[in-house]
Length: 100
Image 1 (cartoon, rainbow, N blue to C red):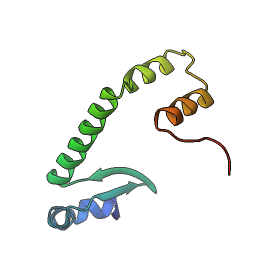
Image 2 (cartoon, one colour):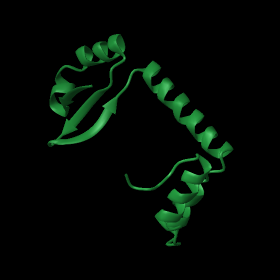
Image 3 (spheres, helix red, strand yellow):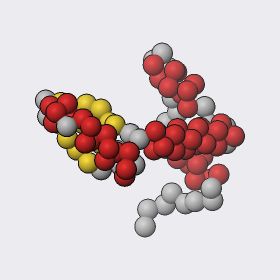
């Protein structure tokens, strides 16, 4: 993944856009020493969105309600203890949680 700073991006915008288009590689743009945003080619963006949608659909099929969990957490509701959640996942997937 390539990086640049905001000022260099402004100065050399055309060059950076051409590289992102040609390679499909994201460009991370820093501002004041902090990562500020990422420039993606349309194809890369579409691939990421399709992957996110497919994962969301898979999680819904498996009964995961991530949006509901996030909303509950924001509302201050308590979730499940992590040990309980891990135990359920381990049982579902036939895994052991014993330390080796």
